[in-house]
Length: 289
Image (cartoon, rainbow, N blue to C red; front, side):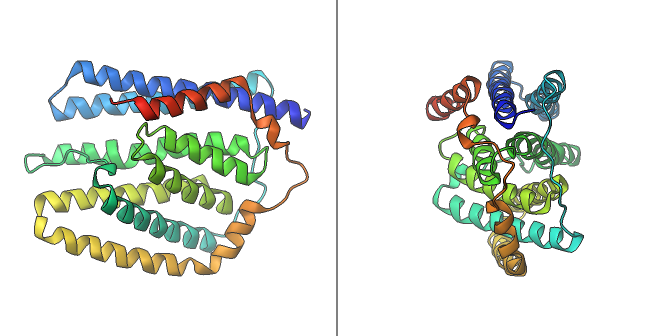
């Protein structure tokens, strides 16, 4: 298939998929608001089901559309060594968490709270782990990196990185959260491009979520130790970033590398993609849900 035609098809499919994901996200938020469920377990179970729909339905739509339209799915021809993937993964965790700590010190309400309290039971803590730590890491990475970003590599990798990170930030539907979500998307996306491993992206996202989940539990159940925990986390993250320094040159070279077989960037634009971006920006600015 001609690269220009393929790029236009990819843009249309992804634009519709992202618009669908945004619509499902808003509908699920409104649904939960009107249900007004106070019991923790039913609320978490419903949240898990709704968030699964928000990401899995758009992923399924993209896969089926690609098959029906016979649009080839871009793939990574190179995969880095296990050692390099590990270094990139742990250093990316360090980068993300340091950014989150610094950003939350300026905008404390930007970090999502998971609802842990002294009355939370062990069963509820386990369910929260799946709802706020595991599920978002898996579903969001499969969608934003494994589907959106991968498909956009028909263009230059840098464009794929920027657009997928922009979509990731906008889907948080919060002006305050958008900057940090966008930056985190850039870091995780860079790691994905450099390693060609979706597992690495999921690992980074999962560990970052786990750190903040642990931080919230410590703040609730052992408040005097919270500052000590965060200081230890910050110091360890600095060590992780330093450990990844040997991979920086090759990592960024992978992102900015020139390829002769890419589609022109102008063919990224389509009506569905423009519609999603305009709608997402407006919702992020005005949505108060």
